[in-house]
Length: 369
Ligand code: HEM
Image 1 (cartoon, protein in one colour):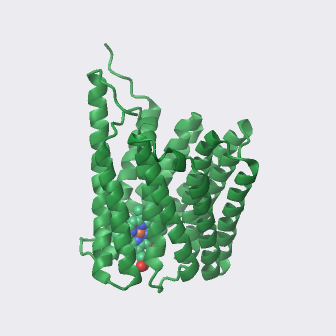
Image 2: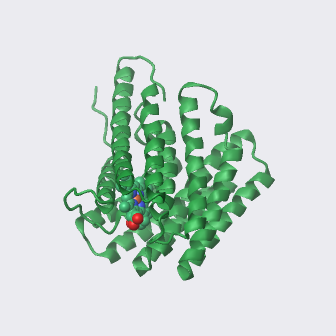
Image 3: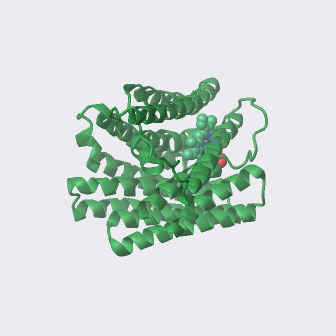
């Protein structure tokens, strides 16, 4: 028997995934120090949001799409995002980091463009617009405009990518053209708000918040998760994670509308992390059983214990939000620390599930994928 050949794509996936995990760890470490924990001096203290959204999630989403389209050039997207993230960690110039980020985003736009030519579907258009938001976020960061102008584009990248992926699955329940048009209208509000934020950050954030709220309501109303939540096992786990995440997106939309994402507002941290932690991390927990086998070819063993980090995430985000809104600084600080520990628990359990899945495969017993 010959040992398995290490292909170039496997090597790229391994390197990019390692950089993504390092970006997650450093990003959270920076976040903890920014909220008041004394935990040494992490690298890149000013790049918390950028490194988590484009460094960590940009790499993961780029990898997922490169695997899906299967064209060699598509791997440039996760490679550039991972390169940019490594550059931030190593302290290379902002111009080089921005160039890599812009390139990675442009290649992702190209991936969706190529997919749309073969299959002109709304969901590809929605995800493609999300990729354009990535590019605009990188350009905004390079221009050195305020966080208030950058955040709506960072969030639009994630909200549109996730909404597009869910629309892709919603085809299974035959979404009508009128229903799709409602999603496109909601997304247009997100894009208009993010654009306005360049000139008038507060007004732009309020409009983008309305868009996020409309996207959340659309997802709650039409996602297949509402039907599958009662099916039991892994299906109930995934659908519950999705529905809880949509709830956070709706809360976040309202907080953006009320606070206008003003950094001095009591709701600022809550407005950010109901979206980036409550919504986005719930989506990651929901999709992990599908994404991990698709990216790595490894089996993933679902166990009921995965509910523990999912529920802890909801509770600890709620704790932090209450701390933010009522000015209870210890509650906010502890909420943030528990957010971080919950994510660490989830990562440890994912590794455990993959190891168990591999062992079961080796011993010929069935693994849930
Ligand atoms: C335990 C986890 C986290 C902690 C402790 C944390 C902490 C923080 C803090 C303290 C701020 C500044 C808020 C303020 O000035 O009031 C911030 C901003 C931000 N966070 Fe987080 N965060 C965490 C997770 C995340 C995640 C997972 C994401 C993205 C997926 C994210 C994205 C952002 C963004 C985009 C900003 C605004 C831009 C910036 O300040 O860099 N955060 N975070």
